[in-house]
Amino acid sequence: MARLIYSMLMSLDGYIADRNGNFDWAAPDEEVHTFVNQLERGAGTYLYGRRMYEVMAVWETLGTDGDPGYIREYGEIWRSAHKIVYSRSLSAVSTAKTRLERAFQPEAISELKATAERDISIGGPNLAAEAFRARLVDVCQFFVAPIIVGGGTSAFPPDVRLSLKLLDERRFGNGMVYLHYEAAHR
Image 1 (cartoon, rainbow, N blue to C red):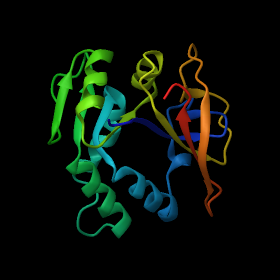
Image 2 (cartoon, rainbow, N blue to C red):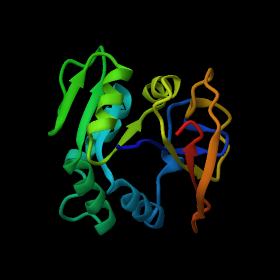
Image 3 (cartoon, rainbow, N blue to C red):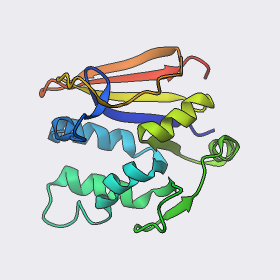
């Protein structure tokens, strides 16, 4: 059975973007990006909301010739995975191996988890909130940046309580910390 993994870069106070929508402070350096690449190799499918998909779609062409090796590697990982985008407003997708769904259906995700050969990654706090509410998230992987932004887009839904078990942690030279949790209901 595949695991549903919520992986997110965030500020120390739990935001993925500040009040102005900026997230440049969370850009991973080579060490962090290389570690992310190792984690992402296990994902066969990415689930995105519209906004996260629009941010990530640059990887359709980013990470090709001329980019550093760790960037090229992530581009290859991203392009090789299947993507499902959940949006009521998006008229079409612009990347290969991508399908558009109008509504998040927990039963369909449960079926995907039961039949997928590789793990499933869910990106974007709004979509992840739906998966948290349906108790579908099995693993959380957080990259915490050494910054407090004071508000913005929260990485977590406000109305969900979930006990987590810490499985691993790692400190990086740029001050980021990786926290790997398993959901207690797993």
